[in-house]
Length: 532
Image (tube, rainbow, N blue to C red; front, side, top):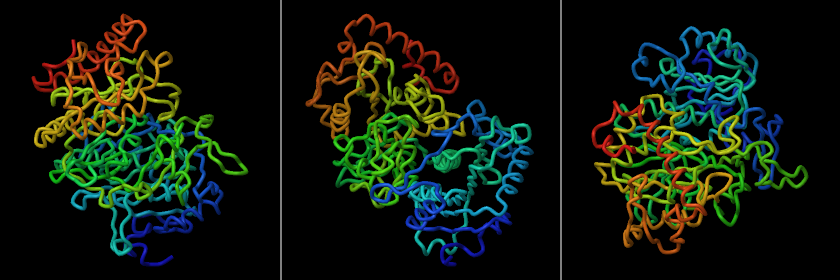
């Protein structure tokens, strides 16, 4: 292994990790692909993609994620949302995991979290599986070769799927564990081969660190106008709401599909790649994402394929509905090289409404934007978490509660200040159901959503009139060129309008009940628009 690939003063032995087998530092994509195939972790598909299965865990395991309760973070963590782990339990976990690692080969990737050098995080990811190394190399940002020789990580992640935790002594729930020790700057992952735990661990770190730098960390995709990096837009939303799909717009430049920061200078991507859902992915609707499924070293995760031809089946969800592909950002033709943009002129909140109540697009006042940001209403869609097989209405504050170490008001106030300073336009977009609830209505047409978003981002939407929604108080366009006007008024899409009214009341009651937890933490401008 070339010495130029790693800081010779910062090898695993320098981190107290000794007695392991062969260590592969910063292999490139071709090398990691070869190692993964040789070790029978997966097999080559069409275009030399890597076909892998994650076994039992085909989504995140949020109930198995812990933050170590140390004195320096005690008063900073939102413990109602984050499960604590005792220091002593973590120390035993670390000891036993490192013992388990003895004589095993490992793959090390030294990477950046964050495109803005002022706010990026140096991360070392140590993986048992070569394909996990390939995955995280795609998903985070890759230093230049010249930067590796003196690279020292701020935080280290050790991912060892073959290690099974012991709840009786490791302070965890099952044999699966994701343990974050902010004081030791160490994350330990065991008992799951689901690769998404790697990237979400980095996101959790940035969500903890950046607010103290006056940077808003966001679970969102982002893009900007073709010839104007300052005309940026961000798209908040949980997995399955359309972040990746809607931000990959041929008429705009893609910054990234999942995780961004909003600093004094503008918007920056945390990542260097995309992790896209492939269930029902089509060449016609999403050509650029579809094309990545046959590009060199793309990781194809948990997809059914023909054993002879290796042709992928985009409709077969027998393994999971959370089938995905992971690829570097430059595989999208109109992706930004810098992943930097200006302060967002438009803030879009994506929701997947399984009740069939919300309009396809609504304009929000800044106070309404705060309300819906803190509410984070959506539906968990099939496969994104273990045990979710059909949409489940849920409230996930800041559209990313599973990744929020701090109290939601911290992020809410940051966003409010950023919106105010940038005079951003705010929108709520429903990519869920219309004409009835899940099981009775229809999924919102993707082309209609694209047309409405394009009209909002270009300002064309303001050429028409708006109406005030009687249930939620936000403004809804009456007419947008290219969209069926009936779709803009969801009550008209239901066969029985009275049933719509019942559903709307039910949803409003859910909003009211959920927001009670924030009433003591928000100002009067937010309280004044709270639904009754």
